[in-house]
Length: 456
Image (cartoon, rainbow, N blue to C red):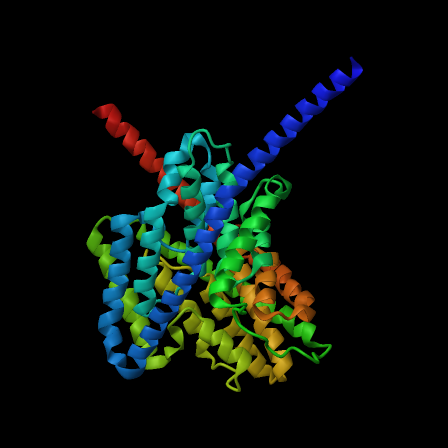
């Protein structure tokens, strides 16, 4: 009798265990598939984006006057593609992902579908490629995050009704983290980004899915591109003991500059929202495009591009110190490009802005190569933190881009100081402000639709 009871208990326990293993396995499959797709798209997008950026440089080098034709045409086309096919594909993409995470419930699924999806992926890629080819000062990292979030959301939407339920919120958060990891080849940065910027849920609830997705997306990218570093290995050996003082100074300057740039972009976007006619938007976009072309033609071509060339030149060549107008150009460029309403990120341009500030300050101080490099890297962390208010994400990203673990405390110090001084400009991050704007826009559209149906 006792043996029979034991056998029944053991059998029931095994059935429960097997069922749990089966459920966990089925829940993991969508993450694996979405991660693989994300890695492939991220690599293809990165390569085409690089070609488009080189195309812009080729045009300027050989026929610089053409910028006055090509830049306005590309800016207008990139804007038109966005408003025609997917209005919520405009800009960076990170605020849209943050808004999607907040709305990720069955009640608001229609609103999430406007922020993430296949249409967003296609529009985001095409609009940003047109923009960068025309000389736009944008990055691909923010767009990659929205693209990855769209991939994970779409895979989740395609699951049959009998499939074990997966949290939409966790799926989108995991996708965004995987997208950042694939874009920069920074797995730790993806994890920290998810924890610091995206999630309000304790990581223990989805840590396995998060780690697995980042590993698969990252390995897929590495399999196609090789184990590359986004920047390389700058010399930071033999740092002076007093360099910490200059790290603090550059962190204050770059952090304030990043916050002020964000504030200016938000002010221009608010002003643009008052436009009542389409010709006003067209006129503004043409003015921005002509402004970018004029700055490049008459002043310095350093204003063009995502900013990666500014970083690599400052860190790895003898032309280490930029001139006084370079930080100004690298700040004005993203403002003119981002406010057009086309697709394009501000992650890489922010790093380029910070690098130019650090390079200029290192030149004034006439620091050694290694001390200059740590000032440049600290400027990158600080400026990005001024925009995102994510000091640990910024520090880990730059750390993984350069594989220089001996300066982790310098970079974290720069991030923390920048985060503190940025509160003097705005208590909320650039992405938080835009997220709120998108949420208001979505709710307003829903109210207008409801009124139309009621009147009908």
